[in-house]
Every structure is written in C-alpha cells, then in structure tokens.
Amino acid sequence: MTKNRRADVVRLLGEKSLSKLLDLADVYHCEALENTATDFAEKHDIQDGGFDNVSACKYDVPGVMSIAEDYQELIVKLIETHELSPVTALISVYTSRISDKIDDYNSSMYFENPQYLYESYIAGEPLRG
Image 1 (cartoon, one colour):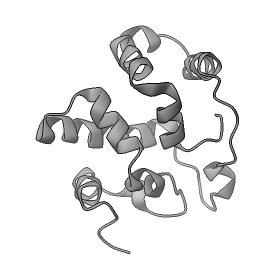
Image 2 (cartoon, one colour):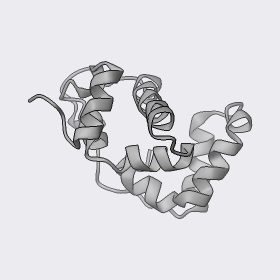
Image 3 (cartoon, one colour):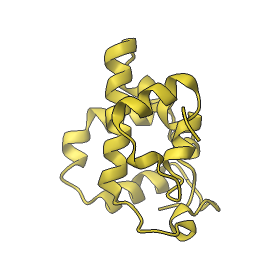
Image 4 (cartoon, helix red, strand yellow):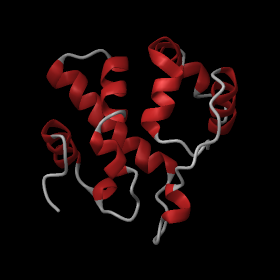
C-alpha cells in the first residue's frame, strides 16, 4: 500500500505495535485489510516509498492472501522449530533476505513449498538459482 519493503514497514511499526496487532488480530480480522493498513500507516507516519513490486511484475500478481500464506507458514515453522515468540519470528522473517526474494514476483520464490522457503531462510539465501 505504501510502496515500502516489508522490512521497512516492520521496522517503522516496531515490536510494540506488532505485538498489539497480533494480540488484537481477531478484532482487526473483522475490519477490511485496507482500513487496518491505513490506520497503522497513519498512526506510525509511514510515508510512501519507491518499492513497487506490483508494477515491476511481468506476470499475474499473486494475491495478497497467497503471499500472506507463504509468510505465515514460514513464521509458524520458526516459532515451532526455534521456540521464538510470534513477534520475534515475524520480524526475523520480514527483515530477512528471503523476504525480498518472496516479494520479487518475477521470480518463482513465492511459489516454492514451505520447506524450501524455511531451508532458504535458514541458509540466508535461496538454495537454488
């Protein structure tokens, strides 16, 4: 929405706001995604950036929920295997090099299976090409 990298948005929101967002997820879930995103962007003065992976995409842009599912599976795997808190796992994933690869919709990274994404995250880079 703000054309910022996910890592930048996570840093701007900060751990406290991310914790609140996760704690109240069942409430925010009832709101339209755009409303919640706009509210948080305004509250944290998140300005528009220059990252536009949608316009740069040469193919069909994956749906928001498809991408969210990739991130969710990776975050849950980290929570389970490394005993991280949800907020710590979320911050770690969204600020990792893998996040930039998942968000490059001209690559196939967001189509990869959850185990491949996890192993690539642990390696710090995609395991192949």
